[in-house]
Amino acid sequence: MHELIIESGRAEKNYWRDLWRYRELFYFLAWRDILVRYKQTVIGVAWAVVRPLLTVVVFTVVFSKIAKLPAPGAVPYALLVMAAMLPWQFFATALSECSGSLIGNANLISKIYFPRLIIPAGSVITSLVDFLITLGMMAALMLWYRYLPDWRILTLPLFTFLAFGASFGLGLWLCALNVEYRDFRYIVPFIVQFGLYISPVGFSSAIVPENLRLLYMMNPMVGVIDGFRWALLRGETPFQVSSFSISTAITSLLCLSGIWYFRRMEKTFADVI
Image (cartoon, rainbow, N blue to C red; front, side, top):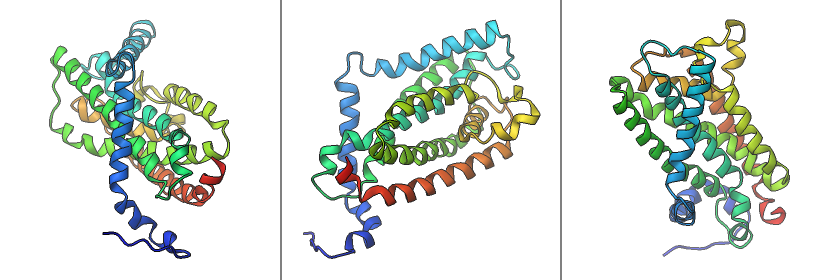
């Protein structure tokens, strides 16, 4: 039996403890989002397959057949693109879902108290379902090309966690700003689309000029994508310690600053939304 005490400042002091106390609400919201995404759509799970598959086909044709960009070693170009689509698709989906999560739960926010951080966190977790589907596609494609991974695949959870952090940190900024300024719902698709072009999804990081490499690595998804390729493609694409370190630092900064800004704006959500 839970004790309910209404006391000035109590909610603030116990905020992080409340995140654990309200874990059942977190499970409920995450499961609800999964059901809505896959039960109330025309093609359901197939959409999570068609979208990355078409992107892989288009990028392989454009960058490999037309632009004649090489793949490192003996890696088939389709696998090079698919290994990058895994983290990018997760990042793009999680960022889009997270940015609109508070607006989508406006009725819940305006009626009861709970740590609002649960909502964007739950929306990022549900994006892992799409990630697992895409991972299954990657496994099927590797079997098709008879290109099996080696021991490096054991490091994949590390890079997945880094992709989760990047989408969660940036998503917290965008979902808080989206409540205050509704114009941000138009900016998020642009960020996702622009990020696709400046991330090494359709090409290898090796073709980036040396004088632009430091600026290029400021994109946190560069280290994530390079890490995924290194883990899945038997090290044919080199593991860049500098790229991984910069991605980790920027992701940590995004998460810490995102939580700070979200907590700062959280008190106004119920009134503004």
